[in-house]
Amino acid sequence: MLFNNNTKAQPQTTSSVWQSLKSGLNKTRDLLFTDIGEILSQENYDSDTLLDELENRLLIADVGVDATVKIISGLKSEIKRQKPASSDEIMILLKNQMVSILKNIESPLIISNDKHKPFTILVVGVNGAGKTTTIGKLTHLYKNDYKTMIAAGDTFRAAAIEQLAAWGERNTVPVISKPQGSDSAAVVYDALQNASQDKMDLLIADTAGRLQNKSNLIDELKKIRKTISKFNPELPVVTLLVIDAATGQNALNQAVQFNSEIGIDGLVLTKLDGTAKGGIIFAIAEKLGIPLHYIGTGESIDDISVFNANDFVSALLSINK
Ligand SMILES: Nc1nc2c(ncn2[C@@H]2O[C@H](COP(=O)(O)OP(=O)(O)OP(=O)(O)O)[C@@H](O)[C@H]2O)c(=O)[nH]1
Ligand SMILES: [Mg+2]
Image 1 (cartoon, rainbow, N blue to C red):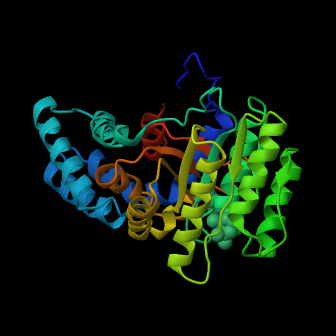
Image 2 (spheres, helix red, strand yellow):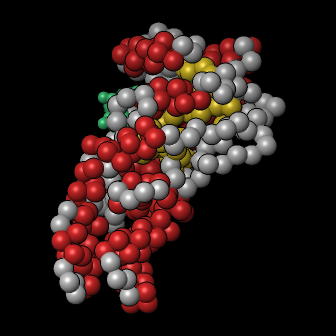
Image 3 (cartoon, rainbow, N blue to C red):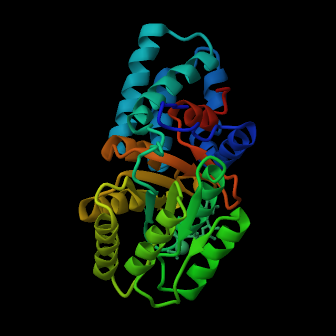
């Protein structure tokens, strides 16, 4: 966990979060490793058979060609070099290869203690990715350390405003909203004014995932971003993209597109619990290199973890941290 002088403690990986992460990765783990133990437990197991089988599984789990080649060739040369004697030792070698890829995107979100307040997190992503739920979870994580307000910037659907209001109530933090159909940039501006007046440390703003069409959506997000700069050009702002792991390769494509259109500072990968395609995280690390701050492993308020490469791979391989 990172600390720095200007910040309070970042949320910790508690044992319940660790459990949620571990069980959330069940489907991906099953796909990757079911019966692998059998190959390993055979006396004089054939490492080529193991590597071929692993390679297939990694590709099916959406790890992507580049990261798969890296993992398999790294593992192959380590097996040759270290001649592991037990399946546990091989798992450690595999773990090291996987962690080294994911380290590339490990970078916890630091809420800086800037003199310009509030620190603003703009949450974007396609519809259904898990934006609003993530805001509920993040608010829960941060509200005790930072005076937090949330903004209902998704004005497209009335239900979206109600959903955010419910998360606000649950977390007992103030929610700024306007009626359905209002200008979303105006909601965010209003929230910034309120947050500033009430000396909030943190403002988390929701946005729409679906508008009439994609260019409307991108235009709206650009307008919101401009509005924040207009309010105070020096305000610390992070644009967080929420992507759904279950959409596999599509999640990666969305990240590339959003990044080129509006610029993304960090990622949240949700719904790892519902999919065997959790391997997409390696493709994201290999192809994108944008910091992955959080991962979501369920619908409950606690089902979120600060992304840590070592914890993630340990949970995936079901070995101790
Ligand atoms: N299993 C699981 N479900 C999740 C996770 N995160 C969100 N969900 C569910 O996914 C569905 C969509 O989540 P929302 O938070 O409403 O998604 P959104 O991006 O705000 O969607 P729009 O407002 O339509 O753009 C809800 O049923 C959530 O409970 C997760 O990590 N795991
Ligand atoms: Mg939403």
